[in-house]
Image (cartoon, rainbow, N blue to C red; front, side, top):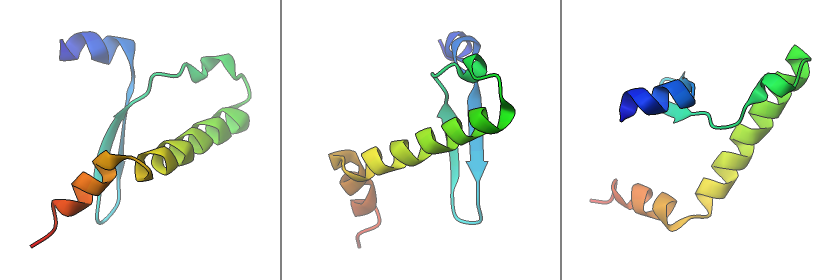
Length: 68
C-alpha cells in the first residue's frame, strides 16, 4: 500500500535540529508555472497545515506525550 501512495503523492522530508517530519503532498503544484509562485504556494500551504494542526485535539494529544 505504501508504494501505491508513494506513486500518487510525492513525499517531502523536513528536518531541523529538533524535528524530522515527512509529509505526503496531495496538491499538484505543477499547475503553477512560475517557480517562485509555486514555492510561495507550497510554503503558504505548509503554514496553513501547521496552523490547522495546532487547533486539533491530536496536537494536544501529541504534546501530552511529553508529560511526566
